[in-house]
Length: 214
Image (tube, rainbow, N blue to C red; front, top):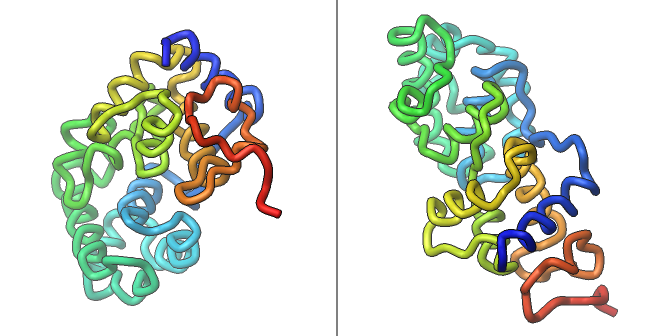
């Protein structure tokens, strides 16, 4: 779709939800980082069910590192890949203590060097915790970008780069929230609910579902 149409699509989402927020429960940059790492291949709701107890037991990198993988594991058994995630969270907490003075770094290279932290996780942390204009592309945004013609691409990085180019600078920081929430609750994978899409007029999806199932 043309750049002007893409801007209209994003502005329609912005008008409907002017103050979007992540659905992950967190208290500071460290707990945000941990929550995002845990959310890989798991829903935010599933992560939110286990993190309050984990963060009560280990609210700081020092306390989390002291728990280690064996101590973290029992708190997160209900989410997918919990064993690998327990190992990564323990290791990243130790790295924060040993290499960053117990603080979450605010630059991409340092974040992506932490265990279990990839580009998407770094983008979320940089955006929410440090106010940077990043675009975190998850499965919802990847699907939406390709389905609607907003930012087609073969890889998440392709979609990310196009969205960054097309999104108005004043909306870029919040855009990934709008798009994630839209993909999660409206432009769903199996059955998009086009009849209640506020950006429908700017969407290029050919098989729009214009009425709810009978």
